[in-house]
Length: 249
View 1 (cartoon, rainbow, N blue to C red):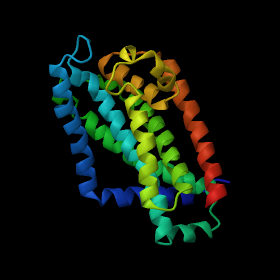
View 2 (cartoon, rainbow, N blue to C red; view 1 turned 60 degrees about the vertical axis):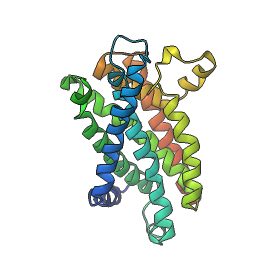
View 3 (cartoon, helix red, strand yellow; view 1 turned 90 degrees about the horizontal axis):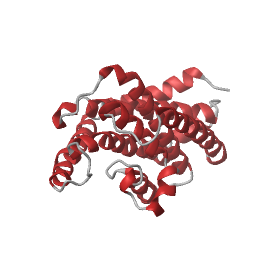
View 4 (cartoon, rainbow, N blue to C red; view 1 turned 180 degrees about the vertical axis):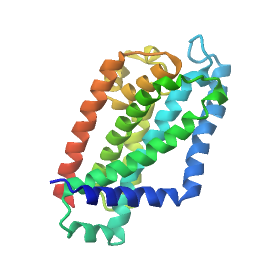
C-alpha cells in the first residue's frame, strides 16, 4: 500500500533540507561549471574528440549527467544519517510501508538532482550551446528517469551499510565507472571494443545520449531505445530498492 501523505512528507523533508543548504547548492553548480570550463578548455585545445564541434559543447551534456549522478547517488547517505541519529527508527516503527518510505526519498532526491541539473542547463550559453527549449519537456523527463534510477541505487546500497565511510567507499567504486563509461567525456565510437559491453549495460549511457541528442544533435542510439532502457531501469531499481528497504529497514 502506498500512503501519499507519507510520501509527500518525506519528499518535503528532503527538499526543505536541501533548500536551506545554500552552500551545497552553490558548490554543486560551481563544481559542474569548473569541469565544463577548465576541463573542457584543456581537451578542446587538444582537439580531443575528432568531432566538428567545440569539445566544451560535446562535454556539456556529460556535465549535466555528472551533476545528476553525484547528487542522486549521494542522496543515499541520508539513510545512514537518519539511522545514526535515530530518525530512521521512528519512521520504521510507524505504520508507513517500506515502499512509501523509498518513494518519498526517491521523489525528494530526484527533485533535488533535477533542480541542480536544470540550473546547469541554463548556463548552456557559456560554451556556445544553443538549446532548443521546445525539447525541454523531453530533457526534463530524461533527467527525472536518470535521477530516479540513481537515487534508488544509492538508497539500496545505503540500506546495507551502516557507516558513512563504508558508503563513501562503495559509492566511489560505483560512480566513477558509471561516469567514465557513459560517453560523458569520451565519444562512444572512440572507446576500445572491450569497453563496449560495459557501456551498453550502463543506464547513464542512454540518459546522456538523450540529453546530448536534444541539446547538440549528436546521438549514438535512437531516442526510442534510450527512453525504453531508462524506463525499464527505473522500474527495476525502484523494485529492488523497495525489496532492500523491506529486508533491511
